[in-house]
Length: 396
Image 1 (cartoon, one colour):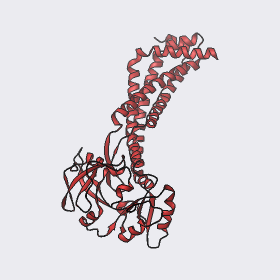
Image 2: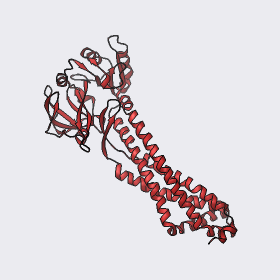
Image 3: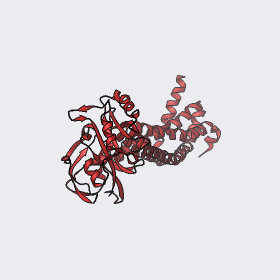
Image 4: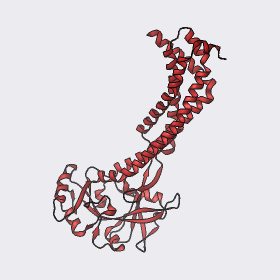
């Protein structure tokens, strides 16, 4: 056993020492695999960024109430009497001014993207006074909050970054009138950062909505109060509502987008991986061909086929690992924190988010690279082991 291990070490050392002579094909394999990993990690970092945005959008104690049967705020509708009943339900947190529940409107306005100039749907949210308390991580970072009862707007930093016409101190046409933008806010990286906010009562008047809303966003007394709150509303004969934890609602909203991104990323990575696999095969067949006399000599001296196979596989895995590390590093440098906006397929409005390259994505990329290297080295390794000694020694 010790002799067999020494054979593996020696044959592998000989293999690696000959790498400089095959630098061209080796580098082709490395950079081919690096490109695959960079694309795979880069595309999947979009889905990871959306997931992180959703996760930071709501806590376990946040709930959202929609009209029964509605899958999005755009499809929902609640009357003034409905929202009063919802706000009075047991299980909600209460402050000095009353229940921590915000009755809200969701309106779409059209704005051009800064990067391309193409028009996109941007959410305008009308909120009530409890809105800032229900979302504990919301903070005005520039300017000031809008004044209740006035035609004023505050804009999420993501929306201000991605869309034209949302600069602090500027104005935006809403309902045929110009509304000043008086503040910019953050929301802990959550989905609200891609929205524009105003007083719900003023938005109702601008869009002639009367005393109607589309959702109620609230904070529970504790996460354990969810069933109490939900049961009280869904069993009330005066209401026809759907109650969800806000985290579940946002996760469902992003399911279609994440599915498309992951599917597209996997398809691209598979196609590119096929090309990289052929590159790895070519590299390792070249290596075996260049070392055929050396391999034959070692086998004539008593070296077994097993160490020869392992040496070829180890070289292939080493090149793949280097390619994976290079590709992962490039993806992290190019994509991590990159800010963008894309469509929410549930509401057909834009959401602003940041790409997120995580350790898990990097590990997945390197594992994929090693898989390419393993397959790319396996068949050349078998050929090296089966190469007739006499034939190989006669090769020039």
